[in-house]
Amino acid sequence: MSQQTPDDCLFCKIVAGDIPSERVAESERSIAFRDISPAAPIHVLVVPRRHEPTVGALAHASADDLADVFRLAQQVAEQEGVADANRMIVNTGSDAGQTIFHAHVHVLAGARFTEGRMV
Ligand code: 5GP
Ligand code: ZN
Image 1 (cartoon, rainbow, N blue to C red):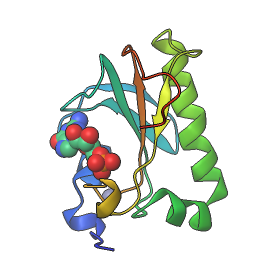
Image 2: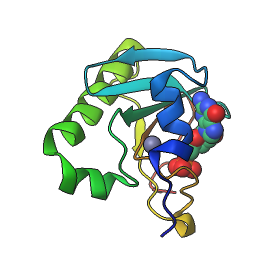
Image 3: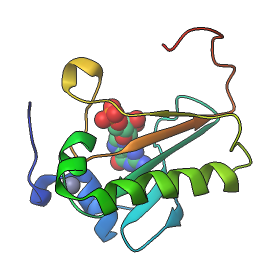
């Protein structure tokens, strides 16, 4: 699996504020910002401030950071008024569509998700 060090990681630069983003929420451990290329009317990325390449690696590194990412994702869903109608997606590995190797959760809503199908 390809990995990026924090120095060349886009999301680390967004966390640091070196690259602008439209932040919608933040906590001590995580930040949430709108996806630059939304796949649904509401599309927010929630990322830990700590650099880990995947959500699985984050789970091993820090249960507190992992929990905080999902807690903030839920806060975003509530803020956006879609707490009962959203889809949270985690891509792991380039074959599954992961393009940024800094752990993140997609919060998607506002689209009609195909009934009975995960993807
Ligand atoms: P992945 O494909 O790794 O699961 O998700 C990466 C996401 O990051 C994609 O949905 C992509 O649109 C988004 N993205 C890539 N570059 C930027 C950027 O510079 N700013 C923001 N806000 N989102 C980005
Ligand atoms: Zn990073």
